[in-house]
Length: 152
Image 1: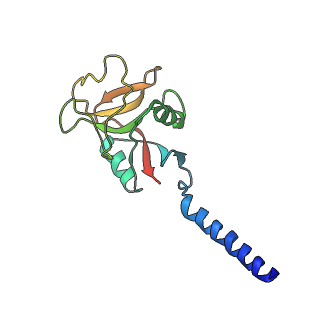
Image 2 (image 1 turned 90 degrees about the vertical axis):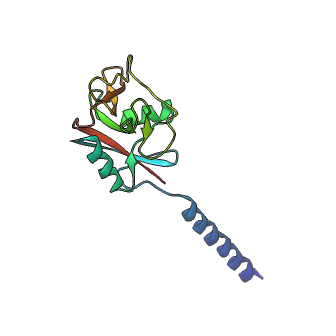
Image 3 (image 1 turned 60 degrees about the vertical axis):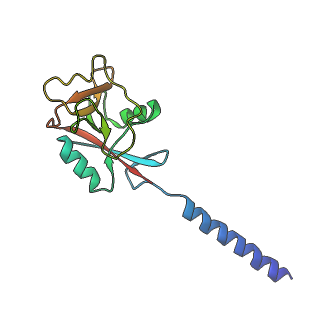
C-alpha cells in the first residue's frame, strides 16, 4: 500500500510539473516581457520600412501601444531620453487614419502638442520626441532606432 501511495504521489508531482511547463511561456533572450507580449529595442538607425521588415524577420512587428503603462514601458527601453524609436503606427494608406502594422486597433495615443501635423510628408511615428517624450509624426525615411513587439 505504501508503494502505491508513493507511485501516486510521484505521478501527481510529475503531471503538475509538465502542466507548468505547458503554461509558462518566456520571451526570447534579450527581450522584455509585458503582459502577453515581448519587446526589444534596436539602436541601429533605419527607415520605418526596414525597421518593420527587421521585426517581421523575428516573428514580430514594430511595437503598437494600447495604454499609458505600455507607452511608459517602451520609453523605459530607450537608453536615454534623447533616443528616438519608431512605433508601428502609420497613416501611409489614408492621411490622418492611423493604423498599427500588427493590425491591432488604434485605441491610444500620446501625441505631442500640435501633433500629428504632417509637416511635409510625415506618415510614420517616433515615440520619444522632445523632452516631453511624446509622439511625433515623421517622414518614414528618417533613420532612427526601433522597438519590436511579439506575442507570447
